[in-house]
Image 1 (cartoon, rainbow, N blue to C red):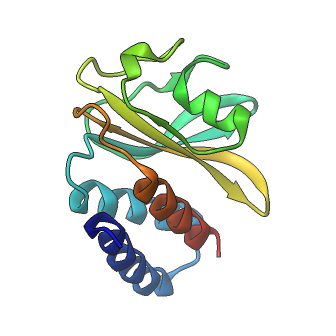
Image 2: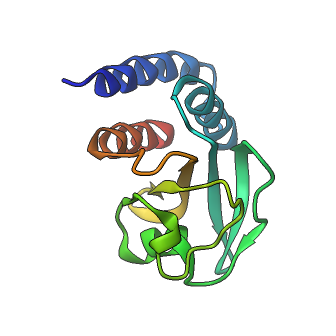
Length: 150
């Protein structure tokens, strides 16, 4: 098991303990964003975009100022939601339709966020580093999103 996978295991255990305080979804989401943003190396922007009446709107996040609303069916977040799967983009500048909320972002991972099997938004994480994210990130983040909804 890689060092990154072990770190996700430790974060998961920490979140399990923190979530004992409440099952209130916004509190859990805010906690996940804070823990990930401050514990994972090179997470430049960490946050949620949530579906609201067919629009994808920014929710809890940490990092520089975010795009408030993402143009329908453009960018990595919409691609992840529309394809219903986690997307890892090594170089966002080569992603057709990429929405550049920050010109400093070079790679991205987006994980669809589901409650009771229905996608309600996504977890979006950007890095200034190219090719920063991998399968360890995908697996760790997917597991954490399942924990939020429990």
